[in-house]
Length: 262
Image 1 (tube, rainbow, N blue to C red):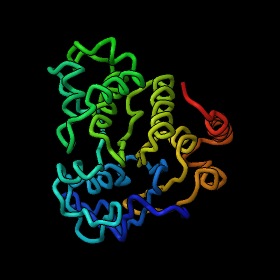
Image 2: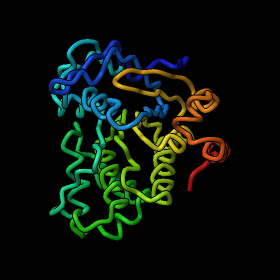
Image 3: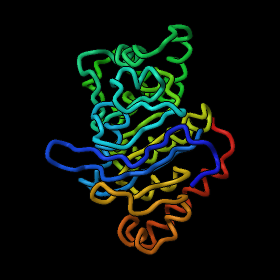
């Protein structure tokens, strides 16, 4: 789907979640420096896909290649140390640790402890509210602030590939737009590759370069976001008709025109 060499290649992946065959022969790629969206309804297998890539769940068969190396079967900490870091569904911040200590928890997987303060300052530049609340307990933050904290914690690991599981979950439309704007900014400034699982198809397609649609554990459509937004069934079932499609296309064009970020 992309001419660039993939940083991640998932091939014929099959995963069971208890008695459920949650992932069925999935093939997926993330090109270096790209944002790739995986869309689908609840129960489609999106979270299981990310957890399998991150090493939380072992696949039944198939392969997961990161930078050309097989990583299925590796422990989650090994995957994270290699540069693949998961921002889990539901944020899962440490409620009784301060915002600053939550962020520092993201550094456990780093091979080098150099430039921690530089990276912390960078995270605070993307999420100024975390700077304002750095001494507060993580559990006292709003839902949007906890999502910022979860993303910031993952970035403290200096990932090459960031896995984001439902970053808009439970957030207002305004906060959702803010979170995705920051996701786009991080990708533009750092070149971090991203695989984003999301139910909000309009904003995901406006943000990403390529996309996949999952239904019942299978990939049923794939292509560039422009190609997916042009499909009638995607418009009908995932974008809610013409108005949502126009909003998604308009947002995508605005982000394409924005060459620099402040």
